[in-house]
Amino acid sequence: MFIDSHAHLNISDFDNTRNKLIPSLLSSSIQVINVGVNKYSSKRAVEIAEEYDKGVFASVGLHPLNIRSDFTEKKYGKDGEKESELEKEFDVKEYKKIANASKVVAIGEIGLDYWHRPKGESKKAEYKKLQMNIFNQQLDLAEEMDLPVIIHSRSSFDDTYDVLQKRKLKGVLHCFIGERKDAERFLDMGYVLGINGVIFRTNMDTFLEWVPMDKILLETDCPYLTPPSFDSEINNPFSLSIIAQKIADIKAINRTEVEKIITKNTKNLFNI
Picture: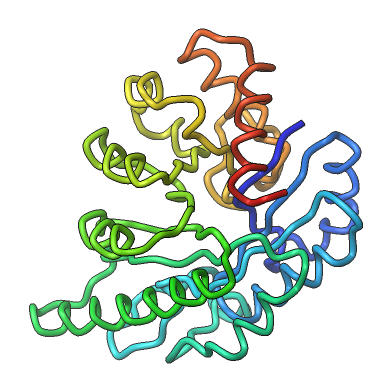
């Protein structure tokens, strides 16, 4: 059994294949958490989860790159798609309403992204302040609803750590590509690390050899970050087996053991 702890089957890339793909995944003992990146995609994640009795879950959140500002340079997703629509503020009441659904297991994808920054120190400071404010509002919601968080942190580990260490939350650092010194801080707080196909693009073997097995979740971030040997037009949760095998090879253990341990980790975090 596998659980894709971070998928985006709720976005338009899967509109033509979703109704066949999800039953095929479930029949292959692959469960999925679809992750929202704005109101529209969060609602879609919930709607899709509610179509199935078991095995499909949702996470609700506003991605930092979907925050509207005078400095916004990049949307999360493709232009013209509703999952890439920007939101000027975090609509607490609406997101809370969405997150009250029984299939919601986390608040996310939320966090800080400083990779695409405006020019000029004052603009950078204002942009960071806006992201920080909305990040904290979403963490407030997670605390209120007693839900774990799915954290997006890019070029922002220090600020992300400073915010999270003041909270008493559980969660996962999605698509973690930091160094050991970065990981240690989050692991010490009880967070776990989301590992996906990016490990085939960067040299993370030594790092993965070090990370304890009980601190790892598997994810695809599909349709993004396709493993190089995955034979599909776009990435989907079936590629989890490739990622699991890579981890098994690095740690010199059986892939079945990787599957067993990481599935347990995922169930424990998201109370599945």
